[in-house]
Image (cartoon, rainbow, N blue to C red; front, side, top):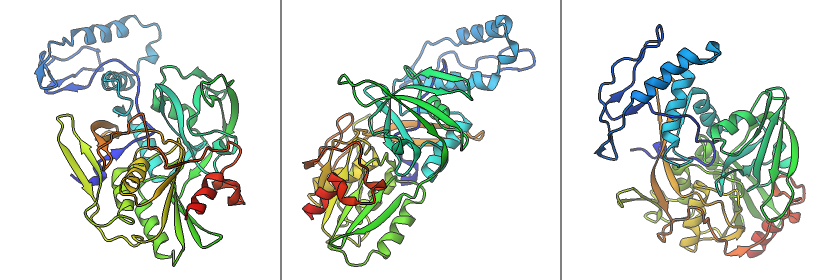
Length: 411
């Protein structure tokens, strides 16, 4: 199976609803003309390899009751009801990264990895079971308004959409749908920096077209290359190769993974191969039965001997944690900054003919040292706290960024 089919999703998943689309050979069919269900082919589907005595009769009873008794018949949308049922079945496993995505939500997830969409510039995920900001994107409305990685999102308000909702029990796709919108429109977010007695704060953000290059570079004083890697998306490898080809001789490299929410596992392994020799294991995928598959470097990197420091923070997640963890384990780089997000699972995506998608957690990923970092993250070698009013990506004077300044000092 190709790497491209193994994806780490931070941000953009989960859902609501009640039941399921298919268990093994079990198929649900109906007629929309008279709302009468067809015959259930198999009333004993298998689950986890064992027969299940679940009875789909209740599903059809509820379906018929809704059709017969719900006051507003125009609100009965068969497609939405089925999508909700499938979503609920998948969500019932309790894993926010195993999700069914209806066509529009699946399209938005793909756009995000492609690096172009309309919104406010934040990657979403869960922190301690609550909706949270995984990473604000550099130069975008959210980060300009002071939104930080790790902020809890308490409420989403959009007058134009007639939305004013608390986020308790809200799924990621719901949150993404509410926060994204047409360029020029506004959304109001109530956020909380932490649970240490701070008061919530509110920001009103005007949506923009978000086009994010995944690789950005700048040569700092002293001939140090500052390479900002914002995600592992569709264009990352091409952008990375273009950057390295034009890099020239430098005294050292700061690889900035702050607020990088992840993306394709393949991308993390590829970038690791720029700094680690052929054969070094970058990450291991451990399946539910305990078997492990190693993903090792398979190419000759061009920056094997360059001095290297890596920056991480609370917004560094999944694929960026894979890269940072491997470079730290082999003592190839010092890690500077703050504890990373802590997402340690691998999702496999599948697209369906109608445009919907399914992302299933198929494995845990382990660092080369065997550690599973889920909910723990990567611990920096040198801890430097973030200054909330300073952002290196938006700062004309990079020396005001204490984390970046420390990285350059270590070089």
